[in-house]
Each structure stands twice: as C-alpha cells, then as structure tokens.
Image: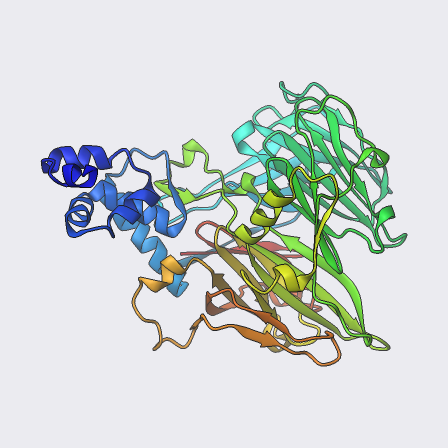
Length: 514
C-alpha cells in the first residue's frame, strides 16, 4: 500500500521524496520498477549520485561545476582509468633521500637547504586541479630529519629526528608554521626508542594517531609504536619478541585497529585512541585476530610479507584544490605480499594476495569483544574474497592501493627503462556496465575461480575466487642513462587519484596523468 501511494505522487513530489535517499539506495530504487527508474534517470543530480556510488567516489567541495558537468567529468574519469589513457607526463627534481605523496601533494626533502621540503601539487586535467610548486622550510628550528608524514587536513607534519647514527624522536609541527610546534599537540615531541640509522622505517598518520614502525634486520628486531599525537600518549607498542618472525609492515584498517604482517600470518591489534596511560610492550593484550597465510613446503623458507592498504590521509582533498570529486576514504581492497626463498638458493618468489576489505572487516567484527585471540587458518578465510597472483622469480614488485584499485608494477625482462604497470580493479559495478573490452589486448576480466600450484613452494594448491579486471600498460620512463647503473633504479611507485608517480632513487620523480 505504501509503495502504491508513493508511485501515485506527482512527479515533482516523488523527486523530493527520492532526494532523501543515499546514493546506494537510489541505485537500488532505480531497479524496482519503471516509474522509479524513470524518475531517477530523469534527474541529473540522481544520476550523478548513483555514478558516485557505483565508482566508489565522493562529491568534492568545488562549486565551479554544474551537476551535469560533474557527471560528465566523472564518466570521463572512469573511462580514462579503464583504458589507462595518460594525457601527459611531468618530471620534477627529486634530490632528497625521502619523499611522500599525500592529498595530491608530492613532498621531498631538500638536502641543499637543511630542514626544507619541496612541495608539488599534482595537477589533474579531468578534475581541473591546478599545478603548483612551493618550498616548505623549518625556519629557525633545527631538526635534522630523514623522513616525514604530512596531514594537510590537520595542518600537521610529523618528522623523525635523525642523527648521524640513529633514528630519534618524532616532532610535531604546524604545516603552515613549521618553525613552531603544532598548537594542538600537548607534547610536541614524541619520545621514541632509539634505532640505528640503517633500519627500515614506516610512518603513518590517521586522524588522532601516529604509527611508527622500525625494523632492525641486523638484530631481527622490530617495533610498532602508536601515539595519540594530540595528547602525546603512547597507546600501543608491539614488538616481535612474542612472535617467531620480525614484523615487517603495518597499516591502519579502522579508527582503532592496526594490521601487522608476519611472514606466515597477519595480526590485528586493537587500541584505544583516547587512552590516558602510556603503554609499554608488556602492557599489550596481544592481537585480537590472526589470519594465517598458506603453508609453505619443506623446501621453502619464509623471508617476509607486507600488508598494503591506502592511508586515509592521502585520500583527503584540500578545499583549495577545488576538485569536483575524489575517491572515498573507505577501505575496499587490501594487498598482501609474501616473499619466499628456496633452501640453498638465492632466488626469491613473490606471491600477491588481493583481499577484499569486507572479508577482514567481517572477521574483525566477530573477533571484537572476545577475550582470546581469534585465529583463522588460510583454508577458513582465504578461499573467498581473495585472489592469488604469482610472478616470475626475482621480480621486484612495486605495489600501491587506492580505493578498489591496486597497482602492481615491475620491470619486464630486466629492462630498467620500461616499467610494466598492472591496474587491478575489484569493483565489478565499474567494469560490468562498461562497453565490452574483449577486443583490447591490454585488458582481462577474471571471474572464474583459479588455483595456484607452485611445486616446491606450497604444501597444497591455493584456490581463490575474487573477480577482478586487470589493465596493463608499459610505461617508458624518461630518466637519464646515468640513473640506471643497477636494477634498483626505482625508489617507489605511487597510485595517485589521477594517474601514476614513479620516483627514481637519485634524480627525479615522473608523473603520468590521465
């Protein structure tokens, strides 16, 4: 009866009622009947909202464009990613030892000016974001640092102080006034354990928390420290003393959960951002969730694993960019990489797991509140909602994640001038409704389950079934010849909102823009 009364409303009133629905509800309503479909498809605003929901995007702050213009740009944006249509490239100097890409800004330290950071706003042809460059200097504050993280939404820059021999404390500065401590931080310096300067380090910011991991391969020791940067309280400290392997990577997967990787499993720790007491490793309750990875054979050795999720800080678009839309900050896809080594051999083998975020989020919701750690072997959780990918021996992989997309890049045939880039898309709503791509050799849609049986590496075959579309392109880099003296030519590769960034270890960073 209620549906009948709804359909009997005058068109203008029906549109007013539908305007209260979310983007996802509008998409569902359009499939109910012809009347609702006609009402929704007849509204440019509703079609734009549905397009946002289907593509995993969010409306931006820009008022420069009409709804019709935003809709047209969003469709052009989606098609450009489908075909990896890069319209132009840009190369900028990359003289520093460390750089980060966040909120559409590529920032790199400048050795020639102590305490200075070069900032470059990556432009966008489709979203109409302007190109911009400037220098950020620390002024009179002399804080030698080796790495940093920027959160533009909170006017925050976190710097890891470095001496000639060690990593020291973390310093919290205002991005607009970097010569001063951040005004909200009660403790502008976060006291950290001291580590040798050769250690591998990772730094992330998420909302009120800062995560800092250090891996000392020389002593097979690793620590993850998490603070509430506003209060200065250390809310989590995990070390590998309780585990058979070293911790090698981490990522925040919710407001109060962090995922860490061991070579044979994934660990989820829970923390309380509003805690008022500093935590030590002995105070930790242990992981609330452990997810096993496939068992390896007796002839293989576990070397390391890594867990990759997009950092929500990088997803935020500052108002001054005036962009019409951006990728949603909600997690849709995680990537796990496992590296193996044959006994009595120097050849390594990399396995990549695409993991639908909802799989882990569902297990996490069931584990929350349990007094004991919930353990799930691979056979219980990894068959559905995941896909395993394998690569040739001794292949260096560069991996990044953004929304429902994952980038896996590598050098084909040891050609350091070329980079093979595969873009994996797990959002079926995007590629199911687009034109058939069978005639294009650089696309492949995989919907059938598959098995991986690598003799000598795993005890059993690995069966997975996550549908995906992969698009491949070969990027011909423009680095100079002297930049390629060895195969470790690339420092990192980034998956951006509007394309790709390839950073060289010595000289420059190149941007490939849709």
